[in-house]
Image (cartoon, rainbow, N blue to C red; front, side):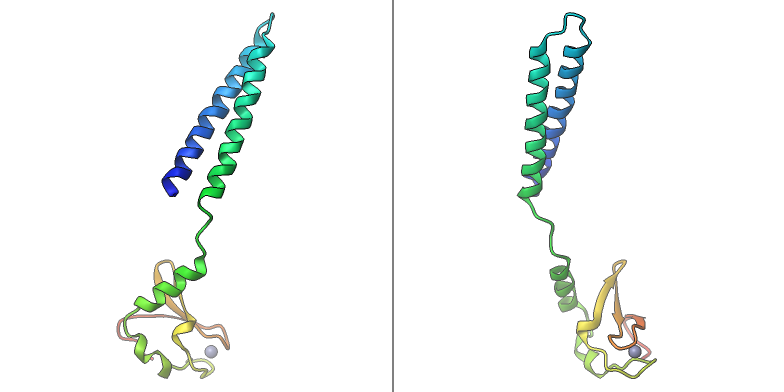
Length: 123
Ligand SMILES: [Zn+2]
């Protein structure tokens, strides 16, 4: 549905641009033709409707789902249960893993300390 959304936005932009040209052309002429202005207004309405439809086509992906999916693929997840926070000693689980700038990071739920995950964690 993402392609349909892009097409809707592009079409909407074309409609809005043309609509402005129609309105400007209709108003600039000394013997201005109101029909061009009306056509322009209709074009504007169509354009904004397309933007609305395009927004409705593909609702934003829930970021929470992405984080869950990434956690499943992490290597060494099995040993996560035995890891403890170096600051406060609270146990860290795989549920505390977050993706920051593309790198897995563990955040202590107790004190908020963050640790970067590496292939061979020192802790
Ligand atoms: Zn802690």
